[in-house]
Length: 222
Image (cartoon, rainbow, N blue to C red; front, side):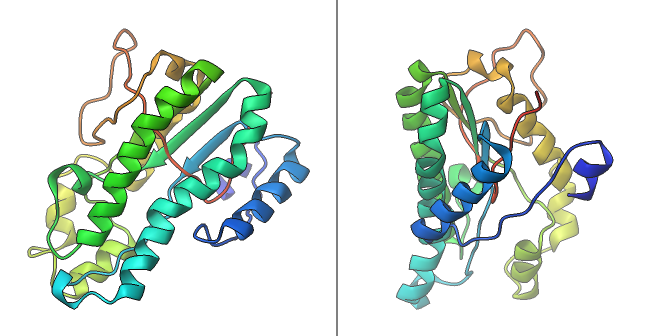
């Protein structure tokens, strides 16, 4: 928030559980009341409970699906009426490279993120004719508290620094990779996902479409 404000923008945080449809609706309503409209939605809320599938608890599986997959659905459904009415909207969903390559002891996380990618592709085709693009960014290893927790439990082998060193992307850069998808440039997109580890597309290269959630909506500048 500080970076946005220091750049001359306005930032307001609305806290809610994305796994709770009613809480999401209330949060979106508060954001619309504050800003007047919603233009861009970035879905980036995510949780993981690492462990062997044989030992998973039903509650842990359900919580991961509720946040990582149902949360994306709840947030998108809550903002769509305004976007459809305006005939314009940008949705970016943060998925994961693990949904494409697989990852042991994280099968519920992988399943939820694979669902996000499939949901994104289908929704991009559904909403494209209405002026709304849907894109996804599937990052590789990023140094986050969730990844550090997995490291602490011995699930990463050589540790965060080693794995992050294999991925030429950092947390802030994942955010930057989402920005072009929130501009008019993304109207060139259809559906799909772009690996965050890959090189940046050139201006002449059509960008594939997909989607992300923000834990808070974003209003585009006038």
